[in-house]
Image (cartoon, rainbow, N blue to C red; front, side):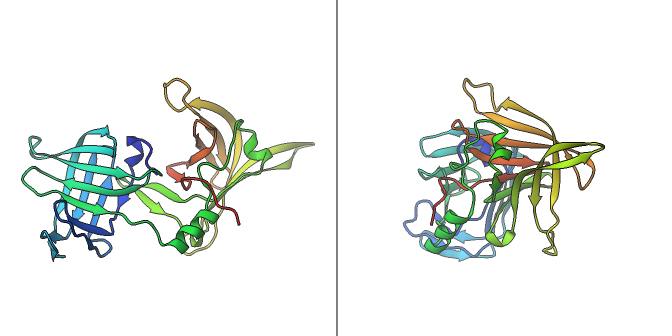
Length: 285
């Protein structure tokens, strides 16, 4: 879900169809032929395909671009990203990002330089059976209302994120999650013995299988909670900042929960990893 320009950062986009923008016909693309990676400062494009006005001429026309982002502006259709060649700043192009009413990307128009033709790449919605499965399985960003941070534990909230953004070298990678990913985040509390006294400890557990598919839960013990405005805008929603002890690795950790203006949870950051919820409302039944 792309609500604002900053949300584009971290995404890797792999379209399913492509064409020259002036062509009436789009063609299916093999996975991996075209890829857009958006970082805070750069647009990195792999484009191993060449189009005519009616067809795909080549699937081995290797082109790689690393373009500097000079500006991103809001438009009626979504966003326009102005890019320029790092070696020749006078050469400017664009990436136009089109959203549907659910704030999901439905297509992009890419032109790396004025001398090149504009290409349109299309992102198709998932099949009906997968859409139905996902709408029932994942936590949604309009579902879980948390007016007060304490509600996370009193309601014993469990989040099943829909996607994950994580750093790889100097860029951010976007990964779509699936039921088979077995990732969830739980808020619970338990009583522990501290000397002669019992103490109620608030716990956050991240269940995330490792590469061998063994579940190695991370357990965080809450130390301090505060609410922080997400921006300086008037009536901006407040994030929940949770200072914790990473109990498994015995080190400090910070967990940040982002809420909408309606106090619904939209995403949660644990360390360097950002987990986002599925847009909309969860289906029941």
